[in-house]
Amino acid sequence: MTTQARRIQLRENLNRTRQAIGSACAAAGRDPGSVRLVVVTKHFPASDAAALAELGQADLGENRDQEAAPKAAELAALGLEPVWHFVGQLQRNKARSVAGYADWVHSVDRAPLADALDRAATAHGRTVNALIQVSLDGDVSRGGTPVGGLEALAEHLAGTASLRPKGVMAVAPLGWEPAKAFALLAECSEVVRRVDSGATEVSAGMSNDFAAAVDAGATMVRLGRNVLGEREPMT
Ligand SMILES: *Cc1c(COP(=O)(O)O)cnc(C)c1O
Image (cartoon, rainbow, N blue to C red; front, top):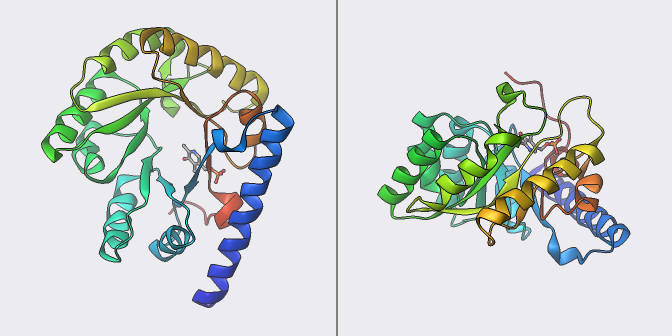
């Protein structure tokens, strides 16, 4: 596919996706401006991310530092500075790199990681918006803090210097009804807001379940395939 054809395809997909979010908002009786679209560009080339940024898509997401860091650098070299959202499981030893380009980290799920990100953000002279990832089914191998650990982690985040606690994030557990998952996440959001009334963001919903997430109050949806197409299997 030529660069121009790909660009037209991305523009159409983006418009269709924005309309679908608008419809989900209308069905839920919500203002479409209350849901932020983060397009997850993982597994797709920097040229796609650049095209999306040029099409006015302000928020882009990635889930692995090894891929995200060079992509962010490539776009910056083109003079493109989208708002980067890091949405994947994160190891402490990557915190320094991630805090260098990510404006948001959706996957803060333990105090030592929060501390590593905080030190890294401070060293970079930046502040990073942090969401607490919740493991709704308690299977922490897929990332996230168990529901019972939310309050303590929210309190911990509130004490950091360079992280701004912004809310919660989750992925619907395998085999769960999305509506059930996102209703539980809405309760988790309340727990965190009791600690920090400003932490109102709820990052929930992927390509196959974002309407249910919007219905349950998501303020950020993270969509990849809806905009970019199916990903090649992981290499
Ligand atoms: C890949 C990914 C997404 C986007 O998933 P799609 O099914 O492509 O919409 C959202 N959130 C996280 C954490 C991801 O890793």
